[in-house]
Image 1 (cartoon, rainbow, N blue to C red):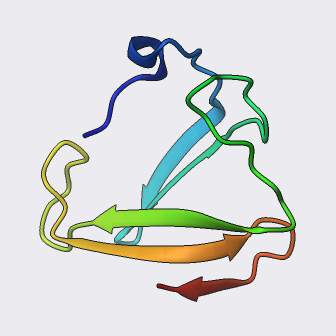
Image 2: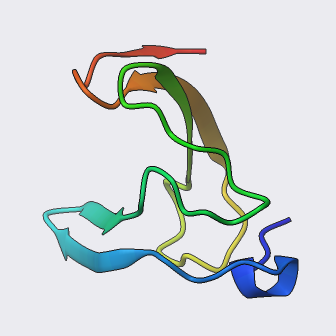
Length: 85
């Protein structure tokens, strides 16, 4: 279940939030600190692999609906190299 940082005692530190939709593709993006300082957040090491979860649906155009598909990737934030789990 997703919960806001504030409900867990943390601070909202996501910035540069954007999104676009064109030619059947939706793009979302944001920036977040490598070390938020929040007790429930882990530090992100750009040189190490970070787990990234993708959830999507091919039949729904709605971020609030359940996602039919999901994938897990290990991503090196410094190089952009990734592998599917």
